[in-house]
Image (cartoon, rainbow, N blue to C red):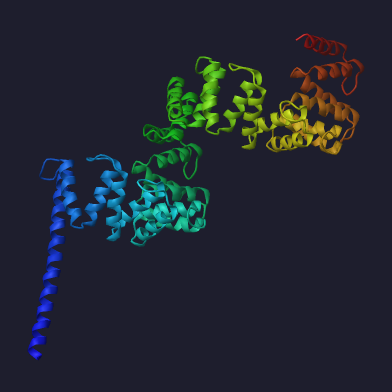
Length: 498
């Protein structure tokens, strides 16, 4: 009986050894197949042949080689050497990821994150990124950091995002280096350190990452962590722009137009602006529109201007939306349509564009297209005035002076007139002058009144010219001067016939 047990144990050990040897041999065989594929992929000692390389990878993958499976997934993802097939890519990523291969886990995470070959699923993306991160995978660390920064599938945690960026950047991931640089530049979750930011941007930029190259240009352009050097700024921006990075193309355009860090070349500037606009960069589209309105760098063309404004407006650019509203408001190039004008002005105003907020206030005050509503008008005026919009500040002052939509308050009226007048608004300068004449919200002071009337009159305000004429005629606030009185009276009369 003892011999039988002994024989049985020996038999089991032999079977186990054979099985283990078989698995090892199979793995060794798979590795050999994979390495053959690598040689054809790189052209090492054989003629480079991607199609043949993929055939070898498929043989290795069929034997459970995780790296080969992942490699096949990448080829199917990008359609290199095979017809692009996102579903097949995911199938290979899943097989490889299930074997614990970190790169495949990361790739599977990206597939779920972007919905490539599978239905988008942020929770599943998170799961696979976390598995890859547990193995120290740099790209997964970066993407998981982005998810924590944006609160995607997890509770927003900027500090954790910074930690993950640090780990990824330490491995040389260019995206992580760039985003971590942005954190240091702005003091987000880390102590602000522009010099460290610049170091990180430079590492990323050296690897050809366009966003980092743009950031290098931005730092040199604005003396952040380095001495201002527009020549170097232009060099970095040119690198990023050459890769088709729209923000770099946009900034570089104006450097050529203004001759900042490069020899002035308006034509080249417009070309860069057109490149940015061609890929739908809204700011470039809007500014090209402005150029066609003015007609100094390009030939004036209101139709082209409107086309560019409309493109940018449809992408949500607030200034462009305001401009499209202006075209419909005034019937420029397009048929006048006050309803459309109000719609575009409102879209722009909601985004905080002060001129649009002011126009919406005027519409509400006058009952143009929208229902007359002084309360809403005041709200819009206040929003625009808080941003320093001079006409809005003046109209808000007038509302407080006359108690229109708000409780009458001459002190507040004076304050708003004063803010607007200081910015050179001629109507506000007239109104401020009248405050000093009649002592509204301020002590009566004819000398100061004359000073403000003079400023307003010089800008062509008819009532200021008339008031100033009277002051010179009777010597109020100024020394009596019949010649100046006559001069300003004539200016006033000329104004009436314009």
